[in-house]
Length: 137
View 1 (cartoon, rainbow, N blue to C red):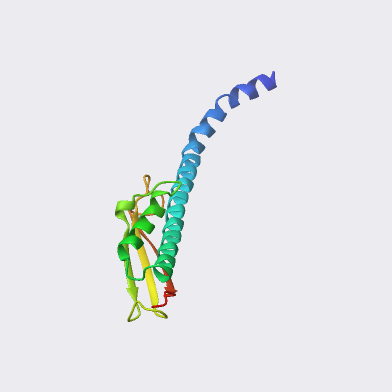
View 2: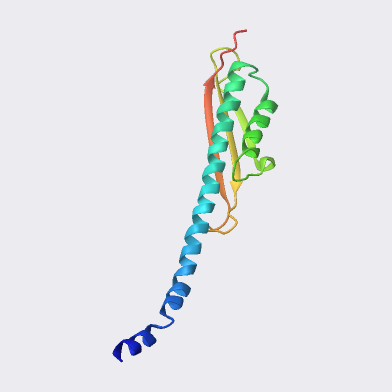
């Protein structure tokens, strides 16, 4: 008799626990996905700036438009998305763009989480790479 009463008192406790824990689990999963989106976007920016710096240092030190295209192409091929039109790229040098000078490619874009997890809106992601010009005049 006692076991029957004990079972009745626990009836529905699993659904109450699920209702209490499900929002926390959903928030944790969605937050992890948002952080993964931001991390892959930052990695594609880094890869794009390295490729652009390498292109400028080896092939055409004065072709800033192609550097922009290279970085935007890297963001466009990001696995978890990213808007290439929002990427801004600046190329600076240390006084010249001839052999031996340093070129710096810097890219930045805004990352706006679909569901803000730990930020109050958009975050600016940045990447920068510098290489020495290898093109002999």
